[in-house]
Image (cartoon, one colour):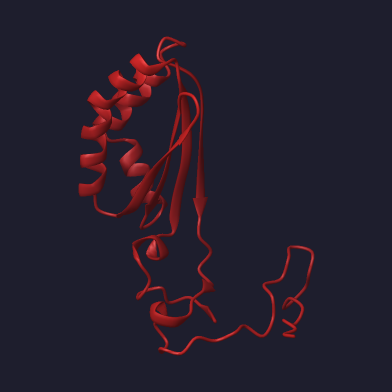
Length: 148
């Protein structure tokens, strides 16, 4: 079912801003040094108004990434200005002593989306959508959903 009410969704579903980023560190020593600031930064992030949820991921051999959800873009950007985040970014971007590559992407959720089952604010039953969400090249509604 299409909806704009995500009040029953888990924290990630209630967020409207998402951060995705990763850093390739120089080696194991850099990752050990990273933890000195990283744990303080995460503690602060979790306490900030607008924080919803985050997770980290690992890519061999020395890349650590983060996916984080915030209530809105302003909450995400307030976190980016926080003391420990700025300190960490200065350390990461200090030439190639600590890290050799990285990226950051910011995403905004559209007001409408989909929900079903237990996370529906409009009622308990699960429901199918009648039409697909239109592509940027389609006018009006998308084509009908055909069920076998």
